[in-house]
Length: 143
Image (tube, rainbow, N blue to C red; front, side):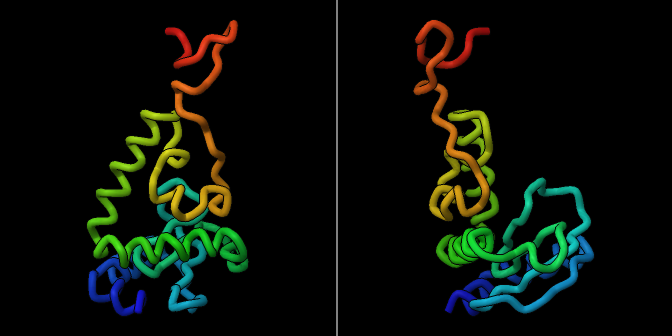
């Protein structure tokens, strides 16, 4: 079902286009995923990323396995749930929120949290207001 939805909502065709532009080598993956290895464009900066049912990485074959592949598989399901292309601006907003809350793009990104941060090799960073600063003070660092 996800495969059909992500083709119909144009997210997988966009993923295939991005794979082609990045000169990735494509291979069939589990559960309707398409795995792209050797992606050559410098953006986005990530070990792997997903557009529709297409999972791309700059690394060679064998990199997309285990927990990381399960993490990216969950992102493919998120594209289906978000009606495809609207996922891209929603994800960008989630990145901005996460950076404002904790200083990195993943820890408070709702999409990364729902895909299981640890499976995606992300660390959980507490929000700025929950960190203990010098002398036991909480809140953002001074300055």
